[in-house]
Length: 183
Image 1 (cartoon, rainbow, N blue to C red):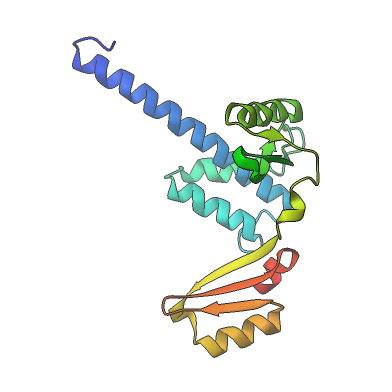
Image 2: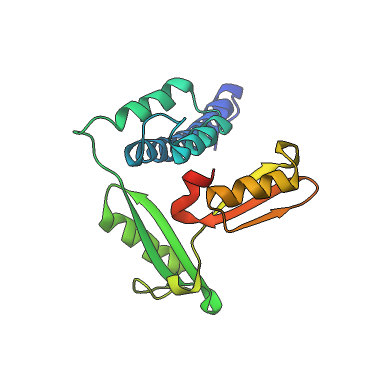
């Protein structure tokens, strides 16, 4: 228990909050580093990095931590992270695809397998679930970005497959590998 001291209560509460925040910043930092390694280290030319930085800023990650994560991607002696995809079946046979970012394949596989087991699922072989899903690119613009006809014309010229417009937004669907070109 925290005791009767106000400082002791604050200390315990702050310790828990700081631990959560540190874990979140670590995950965001990994994502920024991987995104910068996979593409250009400039968010202007790397949409994945741009999204990772936006997510980090949304969680109030300090700017110097973000810059350090981008710089870390250019260093070769650092541990390299890789993306791994696991497929499995959840409760009631629901297909699940898990994409993990890790520096240790064995640890990631163990954690994913454990999570599936604890929740009544099973880890499947590669390809056992992926046939159930279509990998598509999705882009969302606010309605004031342009008229429905202008958005449709520009998206189709860029290589989009479908455009759905409503009163408040335009949704553009394309092949996943063409996401950067269409965006």
